[in-house]
Length: 334
Length: 279
Image (cartoon, rainbow over all chains, first blue to last red; front, side, top):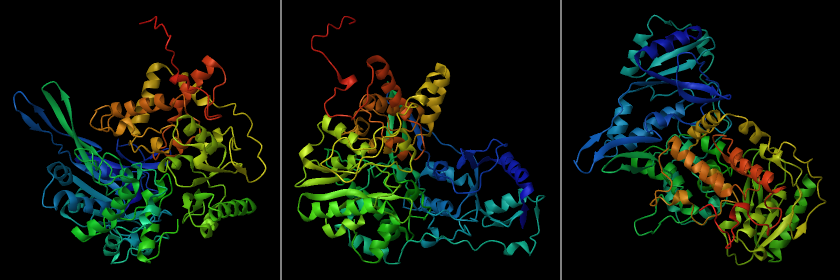
């Protein structure tokens, strides 16, 4: 099936009738995911500077209200329906990875699950890649998003529409009057995008990384790191959080908010001991989590190759360089 | 460009070979031609990794805080902005002058917005100067232009302006970590047990961080622009620190930080004989 581009607004309005629609709009030229107001032009030229993880795992989220006098605890849950449109293959995979952590680790996170059940993903395959994109080195394809409910492929004046799930079928039923049969000629136009930027993510990378836990290369790799949380906060798959409380007399609200393993108070234990006292240990932990620990536990690499951290790091640190050094068994040269 | 780069490499190599410096901090290449990354070279044979081009942008002085008690001197390529940062760190008792070997590299301006505010291309202090000083850029007439724009807003407009700015802040603290004036051993924002800084990402908690940062560094800011360069959300946060500098300029006359290592910090002044008549 295909959706003619001149029918896109109509299609989005139909979605908007059924749920909140979140899509990339231009913010000074850079696409950012925003709740769609029904008017703004979707900005689909490049991937968003911030990932969509906020939809499932908000920066700050109220968990429950409590009152210590009455002993009352009431959970706060958000079950609004959301449809994200224009999400890229890397970010779709990132949601699959978050699912592993929040739903399949032996504990079901109810806050995450409620949001996840209410989320429909309409992915847009990439027509070009940014120079920091390396998803196809991480086992993904910029041309397809198998984990999305719907995948759209740009065919010039139309999108081909492929539904992967029951939620996707619902959308195609909703769009029924707008969809037409694919025209054979145009369907050859795209679907062969590759990333120019490559990383060495060999099969044995997780084992190699773990084996080099005490390697002096971590000193070198982390020297230029500023120890800020930029990489974690713009990463689609960094999901660490902290839980806190806001007290007002006898009652209050518990919340959770994003945290970063790059911060000095993240791993500080009761009594003040910090097993990761410097940026060396913190950077090593972050890389190992992305490229080794998650693999060993869930069988997939946590890093999806979106390249945001490579693009935004204030010190221009580059995770792919670390991967190359480890894969090739060479020492860091500075 | 390459002649200067060669001089830098030779100087670093000699310092390391002679044992004058334990390592040298400079810029090295990345996988992109238009980006460099700070590198730390110990081996004289590795001095060929240093590069000098229009993308040698990152300020390097803050890395001195990672090694406050070095065995040997730390070599540091020093432009105008690094030298002002070093004055900042010296004045704040963060480093000792004898622990650093400053290799002066007059700067021709880099491809970064932060360089548009530059008033000092040549190092103010150095141990060796590798080439002849550059002409300083014309006095930045527009130094406080954007502060004036913000001052022209009504209080309500200003509240919206800063409120929306800090709605976008993700509190990654890159601005703090890159800033040579942010040199507390432990930042108040990391003292999670005290409750000084709420950890929630809300407008009010973000604004608390913004205001605290501005006042904490405002009278000590060397205007290097690194905070805005590193901000992943491109927030105009120098509008706050520069407001404080502008006010000080108007109250006391010319005031600029990092030009020497002795001048008093304006907001850090106190007088034991102060009668506190307003109390």
